[in-house]
Image (cartoon, rainbow, N blue to C red; front, top):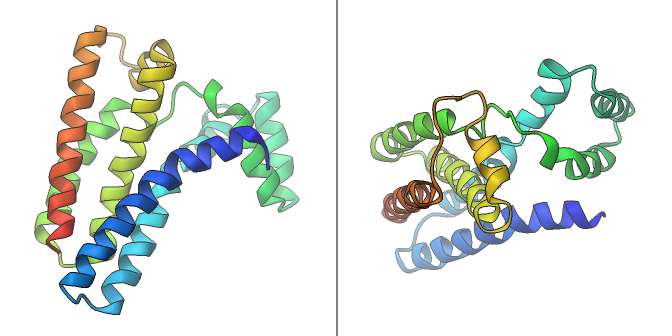
Length: 190
C-alpha cells in the first residue's frame, strides 16, 4: 500500500472510527439495539468514501482523455481495485474541480443533512449524511492547515465570483465544524 493511500485512508478512517466508537459507547449506555449499531457502522463506513466517487466522474466523464484517466480505465477494466485505489491516491491532489467536494455541494448537503437527521428514524441514513459532512470537513481542515491555496482552488472551482480571504475561510470552516457538532448531537439522540 502506497504512502499516499495510507495517508488518505487515515485521514478519513480515524475521525470516522473515533466518532463511531464514541457514539457506540454512548449508545451502549442507552441499551440501543444491535440493528442500530450495525446501521451506524454501515452508514459511517459508506459515507467515509462515497464522496470520493467524484474522482471517478473526473476520470471517466469530465476528463476522460487525460493519461491518468486512460490508466484508470485500464486498471478498472482489469478489476484490480487495490491498484485503482493506489492510482487514485497518486493523482487525487491534482483533481481540483470535483462535484462533491465543491462548496456548492457542501451548502446543499447542510440542509439535506438537517432534514434527514430531524425527519427520519433510519440510523443508516443519519449516519451516512453525518459521515459525508465529516469527510468534507476532514478534507477542508487538512488542506486549510497544509495546502491553503489548494483548498481555495478545489473548494471554489467553477465559482469565479467567490474568493474568500483566509479569515473568511476560517469562519466558513468554523461554521461547518459547528454544523457537524450539531449533527453529532442529533445522531447521538437517535
